[in-house]
Length: 213
Image 1 (cartoon, helix red, strand yellow):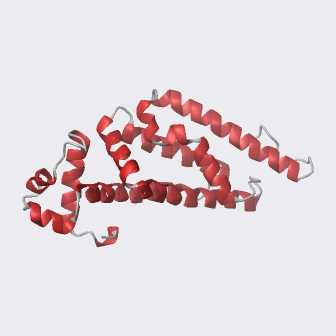
Image 2 (cartoon, helix red, strand yellow):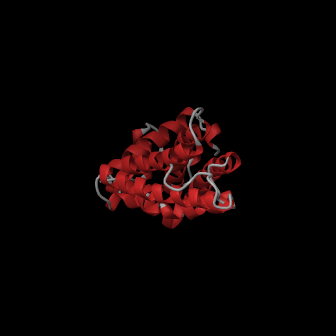
């Protein structure tokens, strides 16, 4: 069912299942346990969700909606330059991934199960993020902050560059302050490259000279 059509019972099921997924693990959670937590029969639970995997997918869809709203708020913020928005986009994406996965093996297990069983979930998440990122790049191009070529293609490239910092891979990585410093270094290089493209496009005349970010 679409997210906007979730009734209170469906929300209760998602809440109960997510608690079990994140505490006991996806593999050890059963539909009957989720039904008991919701004070309903297993048969009634199946009326809402045909399988445990469907519950997990919907749970992640709700997370994605909240996640995308945070990132869209960055894109729509007033008084910030496209460069500032680009940096904040990736730093926020990193913080959310870090909080969600770092040293949380059950959350990592859930993400890996969905990646294997429902790969479209990851694709939908990446597409939604790429759309917002492309809008930031397009605004930067329009005002002369960036020279990026195709914003949508560049958004995909930037997602690949930042994958280590902004995916479930942070489960295996180090401390947040160290990773934040490394990510800022990567973003410095990206912004330097955009500034150099601006410089070249202007025929070598001053227009976002490298180093002035």
